[in-house]
Amino acid sequence: MAHDFNQQVIDEFRANGGRVGGYFEGARLILLTTTGARSGAAHTTPLGYLPDGGERILVIGSAGGGPKHPAWFHNLVADPRVTVEDGVFVYDATATVLVGDERDRVFARAVEADHGWADYQAQTGRVLPVVALRQVPGPPRFGTADGQPSWGTALRLVHDAFRRELALIRAEVAGSGAGLGAQLRVNCLTVCQGLGLHHVGEDTAMFPALAEHHPALAPTMARLRREHETIAALVEDLRQVVSADGVSADGVAAPVVLAEVDRLVDELERHLAYEEEQLIPILDAPAAVPAERG
Image (cartoon, rainbow, N blue to C red; front, side, top):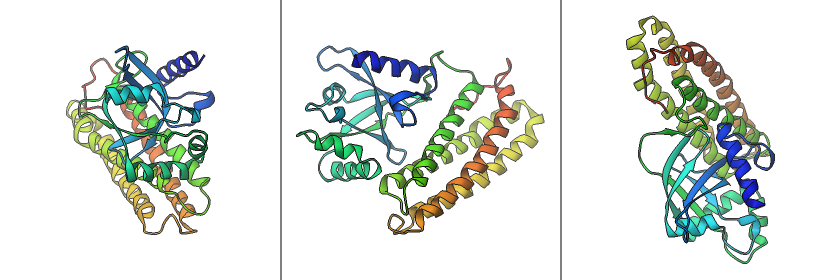
């Protein structure tokens, strides 16, 4: 039964760019593929994860509070090279089991964000393992059910991932009470870093390639670059508020952060909608020029 449930989630995840309903609806979810410690076969498992600053993500071997570590954990201990699917990209990663103070700090962060982790820990005599997954350097690979998407579809997939993450962060901030927890601060800083990298990639790769082959796009490119500057300033405002000393204890912090998130979401949605309207028809035209994705 568990296998059937997992396979349904996997199929839905791959068919819908990482979006699923039911038990995992609204959660941060990845598909983790490990190599069986005994069989040597590939095993894929849907898992919730925690952002960790852009360099890595974190997963916890809760097994629903069961008495034994989950099979995927035993697999990655035997072979730490794994594959991660995040709904947009597929990438190879190295798994590291956190130990000592680092494990305890990260787990405390997770509990602060979702007390369900503490409930799972209370149900079992084992220490729930915390694992960091760090991407192995390499070109991005898209993980859509239909294989490599068109350039326009790829752009929309990336945009929709930012939309979903920011909507989730907004809900987390709105529900956080007066102050922000440590994990929520990490979530905000991680999406800030991701947006910055995405726009740098567009400014230095995709936009120049399109402008070279489509001179009539010059006004559009100029507007998009100006909007990138505006968004960068909003991202920096959010980063400054979230990174401020004492923000987790400051009773005004959460409302202030929520206002900054709303400003960023509003401006970013206008920008993404305009970019998609202007560029997707060109990116998906037969003579479109390949550009850097990501």
